[in-house]
Image (tube, rainbow, N blue to C red; front, side, top):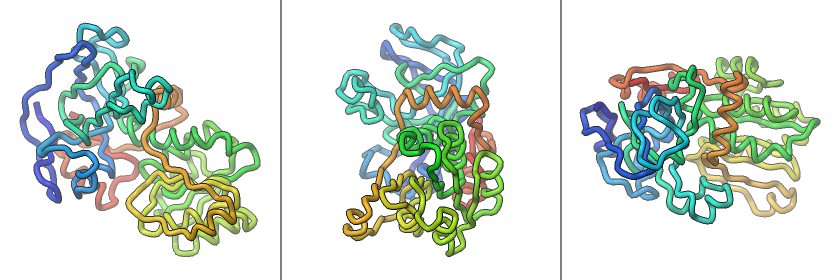
Length: 341
């Protein structure tokens, strides 16, 4: 089969032929990939930022946002069958550790992370686990939902955590209306009655934000912190969702957060520098967010299949994976880039 292989850090991956994966374990599921998202995390992987955390041996296949059709199942698989359309939770889990038993499976002690810790789904086939499979309506096109497997679940997970804080009369700020942020805006509109303010430097991204649920938009032009304060009567937002968290956004996000408010960090790459006195004197919270649970993904897919959360995508054939990666890196992709084998 064809696969997108990272052979060396700081170099673009290559598309080449590799052996097909095979079902071996009783809960294995072999998926014919119908869509694989290209994520900024893939750029960070190429830049070697994840090498220490994952310890993966090169070469390996990229791709951690995957959807497709079940091609083969192990002897004990009962919840999906050959031919089913599925989206895959990005971290297959064990189901036995304390985190899994508590429903907090995103922190499974024995999980793997295809595309980061081993071969992923930028390929024609992906070997995964029954525990990762969320069955979808057969009419769903995998390429239309693939990026919800990571970008979507990450945005949804953050919003879901913040729902108790966002009762009517509150304000939420979304920093970055790109690949993750445009999903977060829709999740906020679907799950809360909060006022949504979106900050982005790209006018096209702000136009999209207005179409999918933003009540107010602010151009990130150097005066955007004051712009948010002006829109909130000087107090700031009850919750700030930072889908950028680098190049200064991480400092702006905390500055936009109201007293006793919460700054939710979803993007990464920067470093937060905050005097501890500023945290305790205002009782502002800093909340980390990564991926989400299986149930988060299942809930998100209910919204997606009802048309309440949609992905804005640009598709590429698998052979054009390098083009997709370069376009994402150069800022030429609005929404999400999707590889279609």
